[in-house]
Image (cartoon, rainbow, N blue to C red; front, side):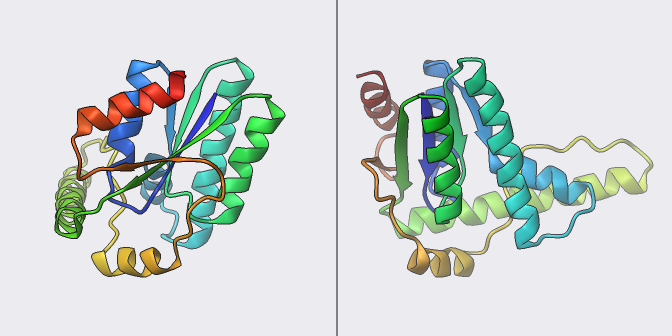
Length: 188
């Protein structure tokens, strides 16, 4: 089974993907940490680096599917090209494609999450810079890319829902209930 998470940044896709991955179990492959690793390696914050991160995650997902493991692909997945990759992988490996779209109906909560994530990422970047200046190794991983609220608002206007059947989960609702609802759909 290939499970694809989709939704705007900061809606809670990754937390949900990780909880589902632990419960099933399934490999969770996320674009954000790959993109961050590419930035830390000195690549610029450009669209082409973001596309490369999707490519790396798709390659890891393909390897897991080839070995027969269920996979959760965790990314915004707003672009038709990204969606086509996941559809082609599922078809190529003869596995079910399930789409979980995560939204946040509470705009204040969504914005607060984004701002909290950005503050944590900035603090970690400062810590990493200090370690570099001291000649100490840097090992910061797993930070979400800094995306402004204004960027999310622009993305919201351009965002199109998947034309496939999908389960829509509202992250303003109870987290555990969202996990249970997802697992019921995925194991039915």
